[in-house]
Length: 362
Image (cartoon, rainbow, N blue to C red; front, side, top):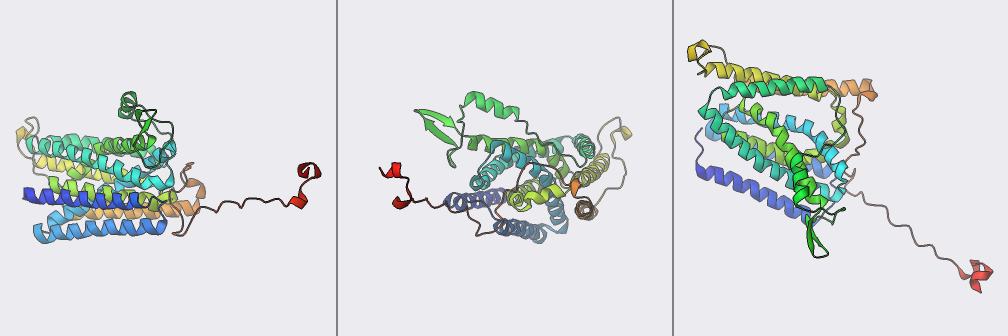
């Protein structure tokens, strides 16, 4: 797939334009995101991803389009499991509901920039060393085993990334939020606010998730452009999915098992591909091994099938056993209705002079 420089620049420019528009909307009217609003935005970003995939199909062919859709669905599904951590981070920092959208937007932009660096490094490594596929396969299998061990349990404790601790040592942080501001001056001293820290926490935490999600998508396509755009569309729609799922996230009790199956499947696919491209001297004398490879159509079918079965099984389990829902102190981050507002303040009580005690009148 030959991607000219102008197309890279146009794609990045388009993503920046979407972020700026979204940021303008958020800053223009900060508010708690409603379920209806979140649904509209999720459908909007999914629609953009579908249109992009159809564009890839038209200009580059069905194989590359299938790789994009497989990568996009995989990245999106892996990100859903990460939303639980985002909920914990929001709760740990006590982020006001009206500022959560901005936090996620900026945090995910930070994550996308760092993922872009990871993708560039990964693409360069793959083009130079075919054995990198073996390394990626090991990472995915280990991650799959960890997900199976995790099972239906989630850690409700938030552990601050070390990078964030280093930031705290360099930049003083205020005790409370100052609206949407990331920096304020207190007694003439420039200080960061918890708003900046929670944005960085989202970005740094997602970077840890990228250590297994990036190898996963490279197992589906080696085209850096498709890897980047699939990640971009998944991350851009992720923050809206955060508001849409809310309490529903806790009902996906079997999601970890489903993701483990997907990662293990892609790990096997990577091993087969690595054997097919083998250059290691201690394997078949450094010659490629004639093994069958898993096509993108099969990969896409397995990924979608596993996610559908996992979701249905989770909902059936929760319906039969309500106690199976993940126990978490985190409440839903959305307002239930578009017209939901804070209750009006109680009217001030007026006291009639005739009702006052005698000593008060005196």
